[in-house]
Image (cartoon, rainbow, N blue to C red; front, top):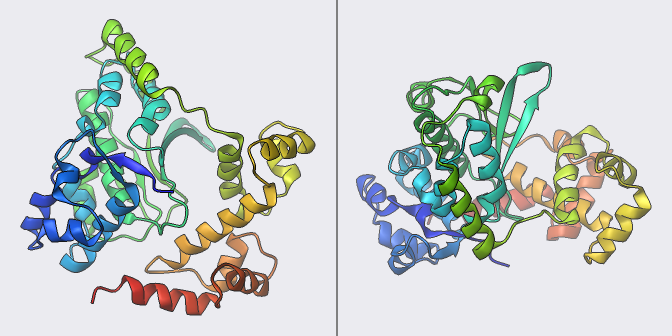
Length: 342
């Protein structure tokens, strides 16, 4: 099934490609898109194609900061009606909560979560995730999204809210000076997740454009035309499994405890959604396998086996043969050959 995103996500792409010496229209066609797909920002395009386009552009132009450059041509206005909603929020925390709830309108593959920082109660992480099953991770999309988030916080608060730290799940792609210029804060690479860390007190900061009437009208419009996205139990289980695999606490009992359900209740409700717990775990393992071995600096297979919750490397090898019909090493060589521009 194709996951969709608003065409506004590629606002400014063709001009950026031209600046980098690439024919942007040809690049669009290379990933199955056309200029007509981008004429209306409210039209929907394949999110997978958008991700592939940015990574392809970074490779063929040898420009490591494509995502950061594109962010400088965009703004939170690309979120359309969702931006109209968060623009009129009362506080920074209110705006972030609304963004997290309605981000699915822009694309159901995107999520934003507010998490406390363990051991540091004065800080909070704004965690961004792109969940496209079977799709390799996209450093360019991560950097684009985090740059837009930081710029949005700055503009919404009249420059009062600035990040304490920005975290990237991938290795550093560009010179440190590039990140410092864009984010104005320290950056941590190879982190557990993509996140912007701010002071918890900033969540209470009042926003200058707060308009209760406009906020209520926009929210009513979104609810009427898009409904609300209450995550299914399968989606919740998938999220818990992703976090728990490497900790070795990923049994049905462990996940049920996190979701405050009895294990039998968990199993029954998953069956009602046509899902099986063990299948979800296997799918998450496969997706994380693809993500990890698609990195330029993949972990050793022994380490990857532990990250995926396997007791030994041979179990990972057996799973890889079942998923893809080959060994992990052969899979990565095949993936690398397919991703290398001819």
